[in-house]
Length: 177
Length: 372
Image (cartoon, rainbow over all chains, first blue to last red; front, side, top):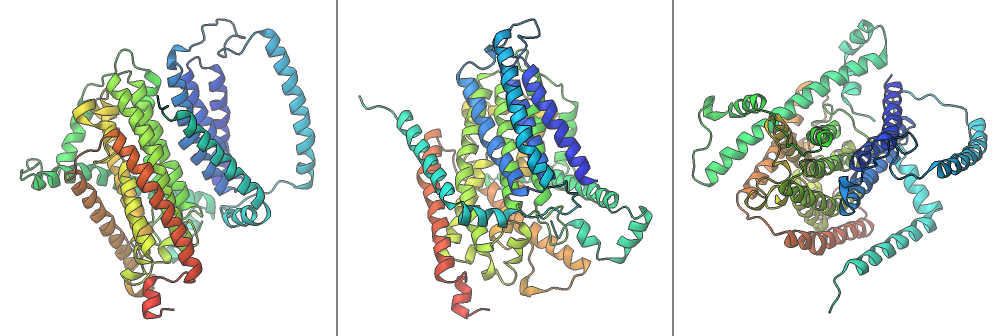
C-alpha cells in the first residue's frame, strides 16, 4: 500500500510539475515547479528501491541545481523576463515559432522511437517485480561498484569536477590592475 | 529499514490483536501506526520549538541580568502559547508588489523541510519513524529545502532587506553544507554505515565509546560539525540572513502573523534536529551505559530521556553561544567556511580513514585498555 501510494503521489508530482514548468509564464515559478518535478522523480527512484539514488537526487537537485538556477535567473533579470505571447504556440516563454516546434516534434519522435527500441529489450528480459514494505539497500552494492568496477570513470569525473572548480575560481577572481 | 516503530511494536502480543482487528491487512496497520506516531512526533517537536522561544528569552534574560517573561503561567512557561494566539489573530499583510504564490509557499516549504527530517531522528532504539539505510544522507539532503525556502522568502517579498537576507541565507547554507557533510562522512566511515541505527549502535557503553572520543580527528570533527550546523540554521554568531541591526529582520521582514511564526518555528525545530543529530553522531545518541540490553518498554523510555537530555543540553549551548558572541561580517563568514572549516573537515576525513587503516578501527580507549 505504501508503494502504490508513494508511486501515485510521485508520478502526480513529477507530471504536474513538468507540465506547470511549460505552462507558467513566470520564470521564477518555473524554477519552483521544476523543484517539485525533481522531488517527484526522487520519489519514483524510492519506489524502485533505489534509496541512495533517490536521496542523491534530492541532495544534488534541490540543494544545488535549483538554488543555482534561481541565482542565475536573478542575476539575469528575474521576473522581468516574462512571455507576453497570447496564442498557444507562444505559451512557453521564448521557445520559437511553428517551424522550430515542427522540427522539435520530429526530433522528439525519433528519440522516442529509439528509446522504445532500447528499453524494450530490457523490459522483455526483466519482468516487473513487486516490492513489499521493505526497502532493499543499495548503498553497499553501489559503493563496491564505484570503487572496484568503475573506479576509472569515478576518478576521471572527480578530475573533471576539480578542473571546473579551478576554472570557475580563475574566472571569478579579481584582476590585479 | 529496520528498528522502526512498527517492527518494534510487532514483537509484542497486542500487535497480533491489532492485526486481527484490521483484518490481517499488514499494510493498512503499519500505515495507521505510522500516522499516529508521526502525529505524536510532530506535535512533540512543535511544542519543543515553541518552548525553545521561551528558553531563548529566559536564558538571554539570565545572561543579561534581566527577568524575562514571567507573567503568563508559572514562571512565564505559557508565554509561547500566548505568542501563538497573538500571531494567529494578527492581520495577515502581504506587500502589494510581492510574488503572491512564492510568498505563500516559502514558509510552508521551510516547515516541510524541517518536519521531513524528523522521520529519521533516532529518539530511542524503538521509537524512531524510520531507520533508513541512508539516514544521515537523507537528513542532510532534505534539510536543504530550508535553504530554498529562505531564499524564496527573501525573493518573493520584493523588498531590498528581504532580498539581501535571502541571498545571504542561500549562499551561507550552500557553503556551510560542505564542512558539515564532510564531518558526517568521517563518522560514517568510523561507523561503517549511514543509518542512525548503525551509528548509535556502535557507541554503546561508557562515554569513551562515543565517536567524539574515538580519535583526535573525530574530536575535531565534532566542533567543525557543530560550528557548521550553527551557520546552517542561521543562528548567531552566523545569523547574517536576519541581521536585525542592518537588515531590519532579513528574509522574513515582510512576513506577519503566523507566516512569520512558521519561519520562527522552523528555525527553532531545526536547531533541535541539528542538536539531536550531533548527539546521535558524536555523543552516543540514545545508547544506554553498560550495554544494558533487556528489551522492555521502560528501557525505551530511559533511552528516550537520555537522548533528549543530550539534545537539550546542546540546545542550551546553542542559545548560550548566541547571547555571548557578536555577529560576524559577511567576508569573515565566508573565509571561516572556506579557509578554515573546509580544510579542517577534509583533514578530519583523511585522518579518520588513516586511523581506521593503521589502528584497525579501534578507538583510543580500546587501544589503552585493550578492548574487545
